[in-house]
Amino acid sequence: MNARQRAATLAALLFACAPLTARAQEEPTPAPTSLPIPSTKDSVTQHSIVLGGKKIAYTARAGSLLLRDAHGGATASVFYVAYTANGADPRTRPVTFFWNGGPGSSTIWLHMGSFGPVRVDVPKDASQPGPLPRLRDNPSSLLDTSDLVFIDAVGTGWSTLVGHGTAKDYYGIDEDAAAFAQFIERWTTRNARWPSPKFLFGESYGTTRAPNVAHVLFRDGMAINGIVLLSSVLDYNFILNTGPGEDYTAIAYLPSEAAVAWYHHKVPGNPPDLEKFVDAARAFAGGEYAHALFLGDKLDETTRTEIVHKLHALTGLSEAYIRAANLRINSNRFRQELLRDEGVTLGRYDARYSGHDLDPNGAFADYDPSDTMGSAAFIAAFNDYAFNTLRYRDERLYNVLDFQVNRQWKYQRDDDPSAPSVVADMKEDLTTNPSLYVLSANSYFDLATPFFGTEYLLKHMDLDPAERRRVQFTYFRSGHEAYLNSDSLVAFKARLVQFYHDALSH
Image 1: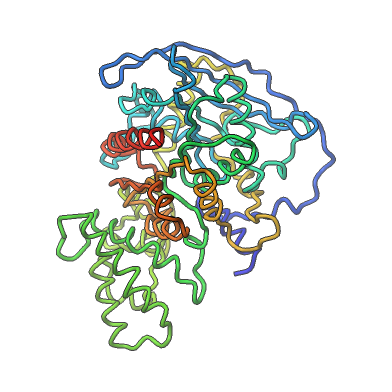
Image 2 (image 1 turned 180 degrees about the horizontal axis):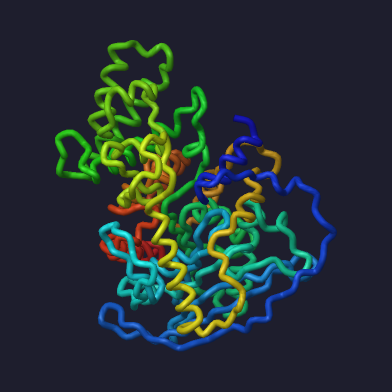
């Protein structure tokens, strides 16, 4: 797969199912014109919430900050919503910066679904929410532990290019990290929060962003206390490679596929203990299975038959299908194949969700049942919340997902044509900042970012024992957006409180 093909594939992987390209930046650029700066004023409102039996009064600010170029000219306006506890001591009160990924996604999902003071009321059993769900106070909000700042990337939400800002200034891995770092530095300065402990929380492509942002901030003199990585994509080799001899993907996804088969009762024998079953899948994927794929065409027929039988025992797929797939199970084909006899396809972001096939004979799933009604529910709830609760009066349509941003994204770092990786950034962050803690949060039923691939990468950074102890892992019976399962959200909140304690006790 050449560099151009890699870029096009990368653009489609974490954003949506539509075929995308990532070379729009090579098209002729029209003569620059000065883009207007939005005139919407910040809105500041007062609220309270009861968490753990304690009433917390807090301020919500919905507004924008300008990003500037080296000459001081405004190039982007970044929308954010900050929740800060009233009366807290900024010298000890942590602040956490949240973002989703895409690239091209706003932060509506984390903002309205995870640890903010309000939450979209999504059924925890993976049944579809209605188009107009309730918005309720969030008993799992992190506001009792940290102030919270939810940031929309440039080109998403109400964040936009202004002045002489251009797509090439922001739509790339390193350009984007520099933008988020500048926002954090400017917000911290404006709000006199330099003494505050600081945490970064990224989801999906947001985990690609987080180590890079931490690196830029540290270079600029700001040390981060903790990074939370939810549903990570740290090295695209583990979700991209599908050509001859490129077997990373098949190995990385196998434990996730086994967990999904377990959830849907397709595993022969129906083992009762998910965690024990997943451990067996990990051992097989990294052992016998990896070795068999390494042998390639030299794999003998007796061993091939044994591997086929063990893959059937883990995934529930027929032995005929596994043999025809040459032992390599494509995760998107898996979504269509596992429940084919029931006419049902599975979600990619969250394989607990299922929906009727559009094409029962299709090789791949036609849509993602975990991203249909859920998206409509979040969008309706956010727009109502922004207007009626936050009192933010912007007449522009809130840009939830922007395909143009995604199409123009520059995945190459400098002149490196290979699939991007931020593992080296993560290693450098941990090595140069001995106060940094990292929490890797993973879900068993996520078929977008496989937890086994994340484990492999974070356990192969060549850290010393003290550095390794600062990298922690946690797992949930949920999907890419772990917080959609409210039981997982409760457990996630408890795990975060412990993580913050560990990081701040260092």
